[in-house]
Amino acid sequence: MDYQNKQTGTALLFVTVSIAVIILVLAPDSRDYVLWPAIITLGLVSFLFHSLNIKVSDNEINWSFGPGFWKKTLKITDIKSVRVINTKWYYGLGIRYIPSGWLYTVSGTTAVQLELNDGTKINLGTNDSENLVNVIESKLTH
Image (tube, rainbow, N blue to C red; front, side, top):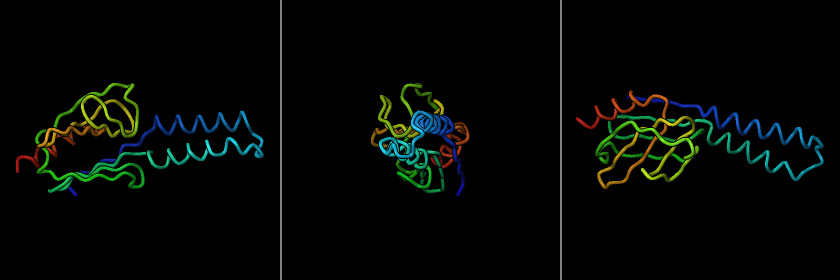
């Protein structure tokens, strides 16, 4: 593996834990089973989307959330170009379709945009954008 980065979604973790605590404070009675599905859902979302893992090898780039959820693989030969972009804060977190293509992110507004040979654009949120671009560009020139 030539490159590997794991970005933790601190904002998502903070929000989901805060909401769970608020729910527990407002309804501390354990017999109130109506709110437990909400707490379990928040826990599941936090677990699945707590980080974004990006790996680049000689032949492919892989990305996945948390424990390997929603794993995607792309061949380096399918990439036409790569660049750093800034996304809007209101595009949110997780997996979204935005005006510049699919966005996979867990924190922040910096992403690396992969333009594929077929014109599709994929945006990977990262806290290490310059290094990721440099690694992918080095693979594209070989």
